[in-house]
Amino acid sequence: MTGITASDGLAPGLADPAHDSQRLFRAILDAFAHPGRIVALPEAPAAVAPMSQAATAFILTLIDRDTPLWLAPSFDTPAVRDFVRFHTGAALVAFEADALFGLASTERCPLFDGFPIGNDAYPDRSATVVVEVPSLRGGPSLTLRGPGIDGQAQMAIPGLTDDFVQERAANHALFPCGVDLVFTAGSELLALPRSIVVER
Amino acid sequence: MPDTNQDAGSAYNYAYLDEQTKRMIRRAILKAIAVPGYQVPFGGREMPLPYGWGTGGIQITASIIGRDDTLKVIDQGADDTTNAVSIRRFFARVADVATTTRTEDATVIQTRHRVPETPLREGQILVFQVPIPEPLRMLEPRETETRTLHALSEYGVMQVSLYESIARHGRISKAYNYPVLVNGRYIMSPSPIPKFDNPKLDRNPALQLYGAGREKRIYAVPPYTPVKSLDFEDHPFEIERWPQSCDFCGSTESFLDEMIVDDQGTRQFICSDTDYCQERQENQRQEAERQEIRSK
Image 1 (spheres, rainbow over the protein chains, first blue to last red):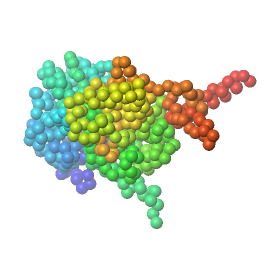
Image 2: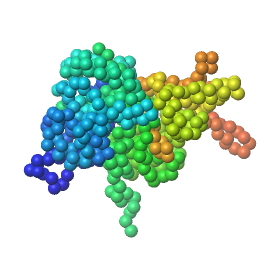
Image 3: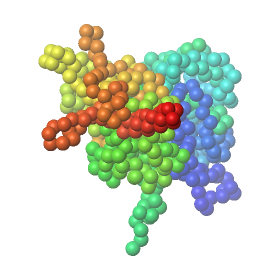
Image 4: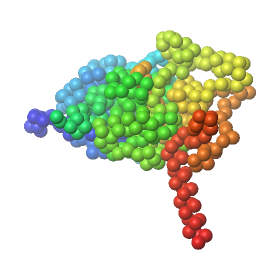
């Protein structure tokens, strides 16, 4: 944004909003269309600590004044709050139940308890939760099956416990309701929509 | 007097829609992918063409398209009909995007009422223009009711209507907009494509997005998702077959249009997919040339 410099303590948003958000959205769309696939974000904007580049890009691409955001305590810092408020205009809410987007990490357990899951008539009125993880690779392998996957796919995110697999199974059982997850690390992300079955 | 053609690019935001609208539509697309076959309501905007001309499809295309894309637009399979030509020109102008008529070269294909004959590949996006997104609408006019039927997965009324068609005509007589079950959960309108195209929706590697502008609904079928055309065990779904082949390219595989070519009632059958037909004619011409050279 013009007039805002680094000395204001506010990180810049997308340099070229129309084209940058289009490129980022297509990467996110690719991730949602192919659950479990690790998608690199092209020319992602600089990270706003403690958020990763990917989580920062996701927020700038999809969040605005229509989408209340819930921040886990570890992300609820003045830098993040100012950044989100200035660049997106989103309301920052204190309760998960009021949010359409959430930003959490795997420390939170259960991971996405309390977020809106929609209802049977309007399953789209549900939250999308961005989960920050140290890496999208190298953890215990989980098998994914469902729409967007040809046969089956693998996901190996470190730090996901048995509790996660159980919580995720309970979330899938709510289908068509449920929460959609996006895992972010560095400048990459991986989507896990509610439609996907996750097994050990 | 300024040249309005040149100014159009700068007077509007990239790809016509404002960024707030695109974000709203993008969020709806992601929810549509998460719940395949479910119709996500969205805040449809006025577009510079009337409802029924593809306003839903255009809004989806405008929200996903970028300068790196190559766009193909077809209307009933043809690249050269009014609707296809104007939408293609619209995006070439407002989104500075390359256009093509070749299915293989396109990254985004907006379509009215056909699925291309050439198989699609992973990474391509097929955007359908949908007039009436609700498959149960002709059976139940109330939106509150159809919404409840979808919520409860209560699709008996659709089965009854297909049964009635068999009782009356001896077969399921629906030839287009033939209802499908997506991933075993939602009954979905595939838009008014001929039922000939229904098998192409099943486990297609491309992403399918459906936009209904008048009714303001977006729905999606992710790649490789099972899409089953509704039928009965003793009346299995089947596609039409014709004794005719294309008069231009000789194809017996493709969907044919019947043309009356004079006032004597002379008929001609030609491929509805113009790109597929031209590609085949071109290949045949090249093959004939090669043979001619060999025979010399």
